[in-house]
Every structure is written in C-alpha cells, then in structure tokens.
Length: 427
Image (tube, rainbow, N blue to C red; front, side, top):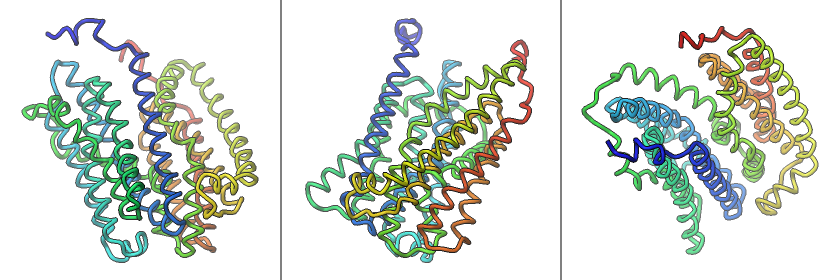
C-alpha cells in the first residue's frame, strides 16, 4: 500500500486543509464579486437588468445542483474508507442533476417565459442550458475530489471556475466586444472548468462498483435538489424570480436595484463556512439537557441581536446606500435610499436564517428545513405577484417580508424541544 496514504506525515493536517480550502474560497468569492461589479460598469442599467437575471438563473441553477458535491463527496469518502472508489451511483446522481438542469433550461425557451426574463433573447436560454449541464458535472467532479481528500486539486478547481470567467471577460474588455450575450458566455464558460480536472477525477471512479439503483438515487437527489432550489430562489436566483413574477418595466430602476442587491448580499458569501462550523457545535451542545437549554438561549439571543443589527443596517442603507451604489457601480445606477434599506435588512436576516437551518440539519430534521424555505420562497412569490405597485416596490417589500417571516418560522422550529440525541454508546 502506498506510503502516501499510510504514513502520518503524508496526511495533510486539519490546519493545512482548512487553510487551503479557506484560501481558495476567499479567492473564488473575490473573483466572482469583482466580475459582477465589472459587468455593472460595462453595461447600462437596463441591459444589466437582463444580464443579472441571466446571472441569477445560472448561479441559482448552480446552487440548486450543489448538493451533488455533498452526495458524491459522501459516496467517495465511504468508498475510500474501504480502500475502494465511488461507483455507478455517483454517475447516476450526476445524471439526475443533468436531467434537472436540462429540463429547467429548456423551459426558458418557452416564448412567454423567454420574453418575460430575457425580452426574447433565446440565445441566453441556450447558454443557461450549457452552463447548467456543465455545473452538474463540475459539482460531481468536486465531490469526488474532496471525498478522496484531494484537497489541492479541489482548491484549484474552486479557483479555476471564476478565473476562467475573469480571463474571458478581460479578453472581451480589451477587444471591446462585450454585450449581454458575450458576457453571458463568459459566465457559463466558468462552469466548464471541471474539464481541466476530468482525468484525475476519472481515476477516482470504478464503473464496475454497483450500489444504489436509479429509484433510490433519484428520490434522494430530488429531496436535496428541491431544498437547494427553494434556498436559491430568494438568494442567488432572486433577480430571475423578480423577472418572472413581477410586472416588469422601468429597466433602469430595476437594473439599479439588482446592482444594489449584489452589494447588499456580500455578507452572505461568507456564510457557508460558518454553517459548516455551526453543525458540530450544535451536535456537541445537544448531548445534555443543560447543553440544549444553553443552545436555545444562545439562539434566541442571537435572533434578537440579528433583528437589531438588521434595523441598524437598514438605517445605514437608507443614509449611505444610494451613494455606495453609485460609487461601486457607476453614476448611471440611481436608486432610492429606502430600497437599499430593505435590501440590507433582508440580507442581514438571511444570515441567522441560514445558521438556524444548520441547527435543523444537525438534528437531521430535513423536512423542517424544506418547510422553512418553502415559507420564505412562497411569501416572496405571493408578494411579487399580488402586491400593488411597480416592480422595484414589490421586489424590495418581498425581500424584506419573506426572510422576517422565515426567521420567525425557523426560530419556532429550533426553540421547541429538540429530539433526544443518540447515546454515544449506542452510536
């Protein structure tokens, strides 16, 4: 057996692994954020509204497919414990993701839907299709790599995705060949970064290994993908939800709103690693009655503090928001202070919401996680459809009300008596 696996010296330390993953995550987030701001600078607000709708659809679809990474990392890690490799169930899971991405993207070619979202630019729907299918393969590749603890390759792939986008964007800028479609191609190109790592990922697969059949795999992945889709609808894919359900019109104001949304959502880019830390923290506290009581107290105080912080952030957004949007995005992006205040309020409240759902994950209460996000997405959709007013007013109110209601729902779930933990001896 290889000494690379057997010797302690060859195994990377937890600190080294965390540093590598954390560094790659920060670089990836930074490149992605710079890309969105650059597109704001390159496009006028009305065209940016169409572009950011496309961006929301592609990234929302990517967020929906992200459970593929978790599932394949699980399969790969379990296989590695027995000295083997992931088998056919991994390919089946990716195939389910590809079918979901294709079905969603083809629906965007339906004329009324395409007119509502892209003003008849059918090529953007085709680009979403290409990017979505590639995303399914990319998350599958990432899952295989991290499941077998190929940290270096995984970290490079995380960075390669936004780096490819930034490279193509730079070429478009230098050649003065940028428009909505060409920038959309640059965005979708990043999801093909997995091709650079196809060979090492292929070595982690054994096509002869059987396992869960199509039925089991499809049911499990459907549950995971639905939960991720509900979350993405009010976070990454919110511009697309607005474009589909709101009345439309006044492209300049909508473009400025979406530019402000990108800025206000910056805190959410850092929540993923914190969620990962929250789960083991909850598990440790839930072992004893005293720990569970302490956890409920911490969660209640944290929720109250979040409401206070959201209110303070809304005041700052009301005062400085319009200036901040013009400073980052350019003088063409003009927005009211109350709109920025609503976006900041919602962005702050989404942070404790996601941390509280991590508590439900730690308790293995997946149905309650789905119920929470169904309340948030359903509320936002109803407001966008039926609230009187223009698109900007509906979008801001929906994004202010829905997370507040969702926070109340998830707080009620986590503060009620938690299920008794499994005794360590029994586990």
